[in-house]
Image (cartoon, rainbow, N blue to C red; front, side):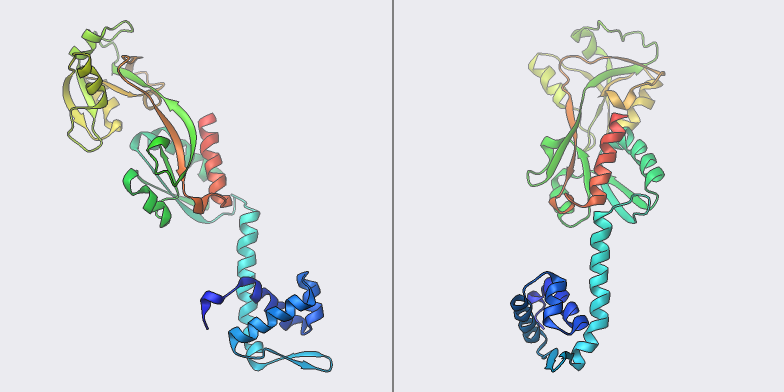
Length: 298
């Protein structure tokens, strides 16, 4: 059989015909006209290379092949119906699936912890896999089902993917508590003389967009440490005289740090959700995206 010609509607018609053994009753059950069901029966006969149903005085009699098909056909169609019903009537308390989320370490800290707590409480059967964000591979990863949802700057997402803005982030300047040189009125000249930690996601880079902006203004920062993760910075800064520019939500509420307004040379960024069309209407994934929004609202 050429499975490319397989039509789910034809299989539903075959099920109705085999159970009713009458074209008129099968048509009424399927809400189709009798000629339409007769035409579908002809297609089924051609597909299976078998009469399937033979006319008799009292209706139609299934062939041996038709009788063999009925049981597995019912099982297959019931599975399809159950799947459709599950997605239409999604209940997070009983859902069973694994969702893979890609994001930076900053977003794992800001959103990940609260999101996981929410999901564990409301949907204990949903497993969450968190992986590092790879923007250049994201389109392919989502197309292949390797990543279901990404948390990132929407402008950096491949244009074929769907996005939703979540919030705008800004940078703050942090140092240890009672740092002698950190105050709200710090000048740009004083700022560049401080000992700075910078983040290089690729590792080892000491020239960032902030330094590019400073260079255009005739300034150079005193960079003494480059790290590959934001998560390391608050701890090293809290125990030294080093300072750093970090996203505000990463350090909000920390009492062991001095947190002041960042110089105007630092720009903020947007954070959003990114997903593939294949998951756009999936009820479980729709629900998870709503949980992300609710976590941020709280």
